[in-house]
Picture 1: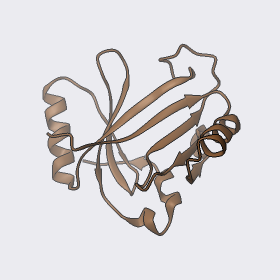
Picture 2: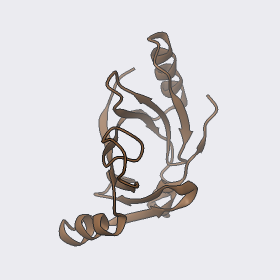
Picture 3: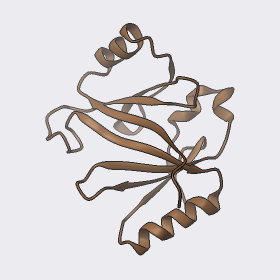
Length: 146
């Protein structure tokens, strides 16, 4: 397994509208997609990739590293473009006792895991350029069978 690039960063925020106003209105990041399915409200921003940065609204009533706490949700690393690379990464992680959750985002195929301190990590392959015609595709999430 080889990490090729930093893919994106996701922050948990307590007020999505306030975060959007800051990141889009103040910093000028273009919005490429929004998602409010499954109880998670998210806004995805792009700097030319399918998405480079995202904010996800949480209640803000948890610890910083908890599901409802504000702060870093996960850092994503691109590991390639083929399912074989994703399967190889999954086997490598399994060998090292690291549990993964595979997710199909259509644009990417991903493995979600935690580092030893509980920080969220996503390892993904770029799987489709459909986001170039429909940026909202970055908000899709379905279970992935490996």
